[in-house]
Length: 288
Image 1: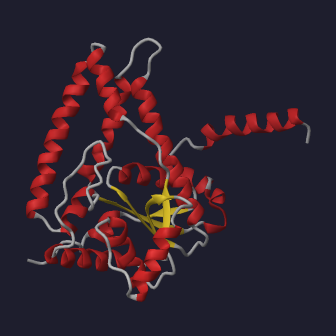
Image 2: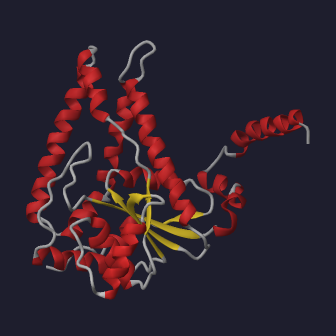
Image 3: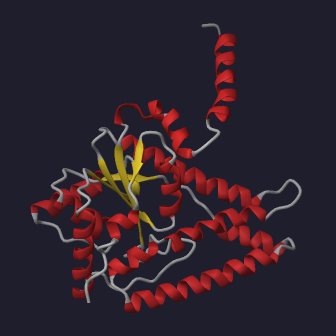
């Protein structure tokens, strides 16, 4: 087919798509079901976690207590059992995609009984759940991309737009205070349930609120928000690359900030059946 005909077909398709998608999202999903490919029907469960080893890499950093203590170990084991009831066929963790060979070497040693888990959630939860499910490996799906939300706040403060920066600072202080209280009084299961609640999902709004920051031809807020979406779009792509069967039951363990946007994206991917977190985490809280 000549190039001009290819271009014409593509233009026709792009004009037709918006017309077809008018109506309910369920109808639109049905219309595009054929785009799910050979793995259509695979289930994906996204669980946002806190960083148990305190790497201090996020915009808002929660200080975790020692997860190697007996009480926390018991709670983590209980949470791993709860998540294991989902019967995952693959466990995906926040390790760079294509660079998980070292982690899998440690995983094999752990399965063999010759390695003790470190403090990271990748091992405390990921390794435990994968071993219990008798899986041969874990998968890294992260895409490393710097998303400097602080630079947006600095721009706002120095260019006559202090309102968002002030609101963000107040919100951050409140979230940290709540997180500190939870660390003192809640179980690991309760913390994870809270981090995956609809209330926690609303925190995604800070990246969209950043769109207001900018003036004239400067778009510092939009630039950072676009990078956040780029990172998570590529993580979503990595998740899809790992799925190789319509019978897959994929468990994704990522930092809590990624949870809302990954669920938002995966819910709209043809062929993916997103599993509601509440349906799995309902039993994460212990009976008192």
